[in-house]
Image (cartoon, rainbow, N blue to C red; front, side, top):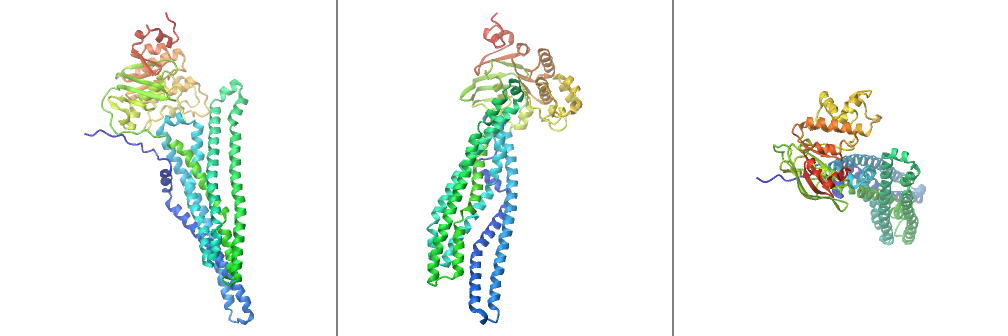
Length: 589
């Protein structure tokens, strides 16, 4: 039987054009309406100068006929052209209204869809995103980048339809007189080059502007997170300078954007009159020869202005440039691949965890270096070592919060990437050094991630085991107290995190405690350890710790040094090693 192949997590999205095509596919009807409305409006814009010119010719003809035309045919023909002008004007007005409505709807829906997909992708990638991007930068890309990228469908449609008047003007001039079209076409390369330069420079300036914004946001989020430390250190002024240090770069790119806008406006202000003068001059010659009428000369001058009208196209080109810059920003997030997930069931077993030749690199250096280790089913294994030895990395590998660069991790004989994600998450549960207070109330944060409604007694039992119940009972609403605005200490947060892990551990095979009692006092930590030992029930437990007493209570101790396994034995055996005692700050004796 062929083994199960890993499949890509369905929350993953592809970067670049495939994502933008999928995004556009969510609102095909509105994009079609936008295209039809903009094409209709552009068609009316092209037709209007010709109709106005014919109307002028009709007025001149009626004036030349004077009172000799008693049948009113001239007046009737004149009104016919006036009505046609009114109809075209109405089409232009309605088209503009529909374009605005369609553009707003398309951009709004695409923004919502894109943010939804990006959030799914970010959560599918998990810690891989925060390991590469600062939280503030990731949020800036998610919020600002999606708004700009969502404007790409509208920008593409409207940028294309903005060319219709230019090409239509050339065709109309050719119909009036071929020499007029030739005269106008001679100046078009300058217009095309100006728009191309505008798109390139605007895209670059907007992208740089967004990057600086992301840097400022990242600095601000980090400053808000460390507000107490900053206040205690009296470094407010230094932090203000650090957060605002990129402002000159932001100003520079903002000014650069306006300079690009000013340059294209100046170029348009020069090119349009020059082309108009050339076309009108050529038209005057043709009029003197009797090849065109006065109304056609008027229409030709309007077509020259319309065809060379850079201003009409720059707005849509700028929208497209912002969309390209936004897509490049979110592309950085999408370049992080979501880990593939398998669909294999978890076989019967007691939670045996095996690390086979595992290597993990961080910043070019190995955090775990060719490590092989077996955690027996049902055993409690303490993981100890100096700071930077790779303890937390090992803990993350045990439940696939991270993947090794080389080697593999197995649970009860099955490589973790082949397991279905829900089964793996149910089989391995965690308590962290700094647990996130997720959920609205104390009860919600303890029961976070559980399917359905956890029984109250289960919540209370986990809180008692984690020694969280005493301070929870002092809260005004006890377990229903909203977490927002409740000042909890680091130790209280840790106890809630431990309670959360113990609730989930009821059906788990492996419990991972990643320095989860570091903020507790020695007595409370010992009480929690004893409670966890009583609740283990043969469950495999991996305990990252800095406490010798905790290591002594484990069945085995995995001693890490510089990412390698220095020793695996009971605490009493390892204690004879001076290097092992030094991990806990003990002397050589």
